[in-house]
Image (cartoon, rainbow, N blue to C red; front, top):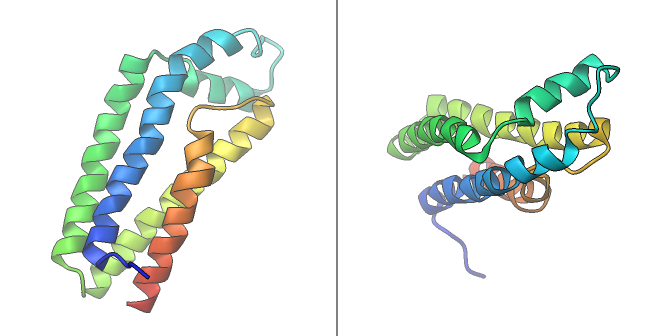
Length: 141
């Protein structure tokens, strides 16, 4: 069976996360226009907070994602340069767990709003399985 070198598997995570971000960027504007009537003055506080996050145009959302990409790239670069160190392992594992929490947030937002939220599909079917793959590789390495 083909298995990626660990450093390649770690770098590939950046690409996979960006595919997730692309789903969000592509979907966010159309999603906001389609769902603006779902959130009313009577909506719960949490629904309004979710709406404030997603009610942006694609350009504004992409600007947020550039910051995320830079942070993720720095964390990944540090991990690759210190592949065997325990402190970089803790840092990188913490980052992966943070992204898993981010994925859970997609599911929770979808459940609260009772509609798809941008990024849901890649969070569930691409990002989360790859995180578990990476966690397995990091633990066994």
